Length: 256
Image (cartoon, rainbow, N blue to C red; front, side, top):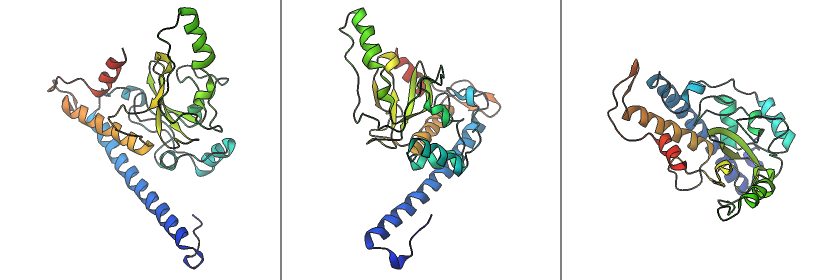
């Protein structure tokens, strides 16, 4: 990591160095826990009944090498958030994850995850412009003004500057990691396709901002709880022992 000798470091530098080391150790611990929980979820949901599991089957794609990550970062003059960076180096570049799974790093540039066009891309080199939930007031507009406002302002690509699309929720909704700007490292939702605006992700019940590894582990926890509550067995699906609606159906129901 290129650490300075202790004799050449000031007190402030030593504190900074210690914090960096502690952060790295914490990330390693959390990634280890995530790896075990993912194995457990795959074992307990052999029929891929959890929402989106049939698309990724709890499999991670191949890990990236350090030089590949650096090449991507250099192209946009950014540093990927450390948690996400370690994940794609250690766990995999896309695959198992919330909703329809994690997107590969390069695919995270597509503005539309349902129709991936090389001419329609985000720009991580520019700062994400938001720090609070944002939406346009569209309800009181006439039909012509509504569509013009949407085309001219609402879907302006400037709102996706500094973002990587990391997961496809479905229904035109994407989960995004801020890689440039004041919200660096946090997960945000882009729900403009349903007039929902852009806002910090709280779908997993978190009260405040959420970073990548915590977001991923919360998905695992909720999915494991769902599997337990409706009685999935290793050899198939038992009769449901709970009438509660799974967390992902609750989200879809709430969006209608």
